[in-house]
Image: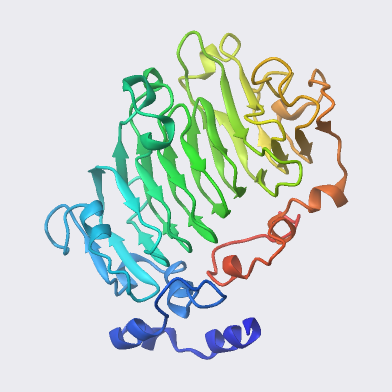
Length: 371
């Protein structure tokens, strides 16, 4: 089935598809069946290598009134349960101050912005003002097959807001490409299922990438920001609770660095690669440039000895002054792995059911260990 789909893609005249709205409307399927390639269509493949100027979107959001809707939330609320798949939403440049939830039945939605710093959805819900962490998210994705490109997602509550999520997603088979996630504590929350991030920027202070998904961040940039005076910075907090669970945070071919405002205080307000949110927390960082902002210990306990014997943390093939292993913690859960074991965490193997849902989009992608 997959091979047949690839042949169809090769035979299509994409310029014809671009000018044929009727074909765009019939290329996909309706409903929530996710058997490949029901929602990964030639249209999606084309969109992720195209630009808004070449699109024929189904929905346009624009603050200046040039689209059908002025807010993203209104546009999402307009989606019918029997909508065509994929459903293409172009969100024009602007700062959209709102909370957005994409419901479970809005499968196959594609959000295409004008650039990660040009199209931004922002909010400021936060734990300090009484909102529980999961409800602080500016954008919540519940639908499977969600794809985003050239978008910015932000929680602007600041460090004083404590837990304040910019993006929370339960979407299975989700691809996010060239997007930016800005916040402080708990910025990016891949909550569950299979999620792939490519060429993205994530900024924050405490646990700013956390969740219980099979999350791969490839060719991404993680920026440690200046926290409050009594805080430390932690890049990841993975929450696997079952020793047989398949969740993990994998950072590969990426860069971990400090925001200019953080650098003067890095020796006082230290930064760490991660800490165990739950007992069987699993995180792998490989082939990544780690700047000299990471404390020599590398990893930080959550509370007491929680998970220190049962977590699964590994570093492999990293470079940069922050990658030096001298001084690293020697908890029983810290692993020292070679190329063969590291390869099991590349997306081509981590997603054991297959990675065709990534390759079909034509986003830049490395399935194995090659950079």
